[in-house]
Length: 421
Ligand code: PLZ
Image (tube, rainbow, N blue to C red; front, side):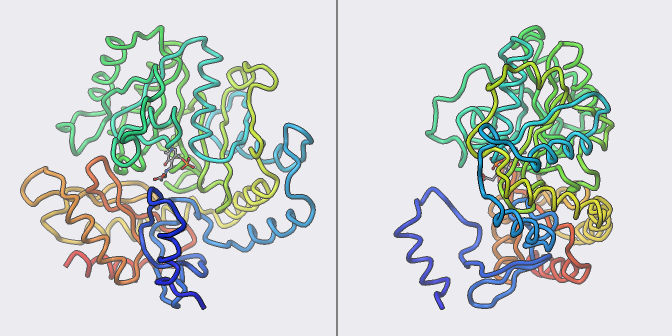
């Protein structure tokens, strides 16, 4: 059998250098809480891809649904010859997302594509152009979404020029904004928007309810509702990017619900497809339906195999009550993380199964990306797959599949503790 070492050589000769990987082992199979590499080494999964396999890897219902669908048909293009599962996924998005108003949905292939389409819809419906995003935001790697994303390296460096009419406002980041409360942080952001953009020019305010790549930043309570209220008053569209936070990850179907938000539009991807590529935009019917017939689409958007997987993943989340599982994971993992006594730990934060540790140089608030990378590497060497994130690269993040066993969680925590030592 091919070894990871041999594969690595082939990879270097065949795969563009710009595509990186967190670990150098190659995966042979994966399940509900572990991955196994070609050498038979097991990894406890605290990554879920990147918050994708919420229902676990190769989840039984997803596997069965995909099998059944590929035997019937693999592709017709919904824009050419439609099929039921696309409609069913849209119905599920409408039912599961917060907001009791009339909604519509549309399906795409990736998170970035969903975000681009949400912006298109907001611009079309309002007749305005400006899009407001926040410090530390991550929305994707396509040209428009690079402009929306905050961090230069590795996402934007030398890839410009970027799309115009994107404006960045300060985020609520309790650890790093001098402890502004939600209302104060919102006032600071709104002031920037009003002075630098002008309320009447804003098409959309786009925000992750808990920031993902930017560092698992949980805004102070009240920040999101205040921003949403201002957006409504300005006649702009409030878009929640729930691509990383959605589908039970934070202990609710969508993280917007933790603060009672009813976003005008929500973007979803990742967890929704149980590992297959599918994304969606769902929201107010009058916004979604403002776009002319033929204005939205794409060859593969809502591919039938991906739709079958999404329906099976959603059924799994409902039947196993994976939102409750995320809260259960939080109840075990958060105290365990808080219990790691290390002078470099500035904060343990997050919700549900989206938890993080931010690391600083002891006694300062200076980010410590070197130690963060070292702890992460020690975890990898000991068989725990963890990821880092953050504008400063100093956040360890934990995203186990929501079906992970308590035993695998405990084993993971033990490896993490040892890695800190
Ligand atoms: N919005 C909130 O988290 C994807 C990106 C990893 P795509 N996050 C992982 C990387 O380095 O490329 C993400 C997200 C939020 C949008 C996206 C983009 O989703 O499916 O990767 O396009």
